[in-house]
Image (cartoon, rainbow, N blue to C red):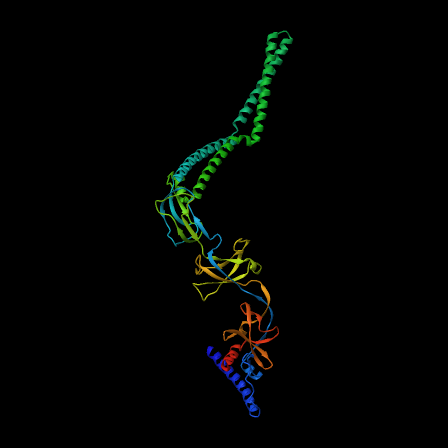
Length: 465
């Protein structure tokens, strides 16, 4: 492909030279019959004369200088930082002494992985509370079981109701006997056979047995209603159940506290089952990442305020920069950024603006911005310096394609299509986008400039001058 382009370049140069030579020959013939012309002005613009046929064969193409909507990149310098929430300090939730370290600096750890073992008096005291709570819970369960059996027996054989029915029957029989005896004594008393004393005694006996009967009837009715409303019979059993639930909840709370402080579940199960006090707990990794900082040694006394490790997850990173206040309107959330770092000079990384600060720094008059970058290939490291190009918002600028721009004698030039050929123009350029460059002076809107083939025109210009 390169060889073919080189051949095309040579062919075009030959065509241009031939066209220019033909023009020169014509001028030479004319000079034989006329006086020699004055030397041309060295400051006059140079024109590469090229016939339409030669331009077509050289594949010279043009584009119009016009006002275009261009996204002008904004260049900033920033640095690579961990993503939000992806770098965490790891500390113990309880005071104690380090007995074992299970990770090393730079090691990759998963969420929940054990990083250190801590011996703690507070854990020992809490384990003792667990043993006591387990004992109370066992007692409550036994009491609940006893009350349950009593309740079920009462339901199956309601003793009080049976006794009330029996008492009622006896009272009823006794009342009927008393009434019968009273009627007999009353008849004898009326016939003057029985004494008044026996009559009064029989009358009192009836009244007494009637009272016993009424009381037995009331007791029977009450026991019958109680039996119908079994919830009252269940009261003692329900109280026992509530006591068991309370002790169980207390035991579970102590268990959760041990788990929260890092105790192993199997260790807690052994403690509840066998009553074995260990007195150790674990420091667990709260996130997945790399151990980037290590500040602890075996035998060291620690407390919850002391950071033991730092875990950094660099699967994604952010590049932070300070945006000048004047350029704030050019950047929006979601804009694409291009990032380069010195470690990979030939590679361009892309990211998306994820944060724009609400505050302007009072001294530097800048606004903090951040863009998130994918880092699954682990190319970025924290605190790397980065060159950042932001697309920004589009602006209407007088511009031409970058392909049309060449450099000759230390100046930027373009080749403008005129009636005489392609005229060299020195131009002053401004802001650039990926494909276009702003023109400040040198050409006017609507003029056509050479794009493809401009390099060949510059080669011919160099050859002539």
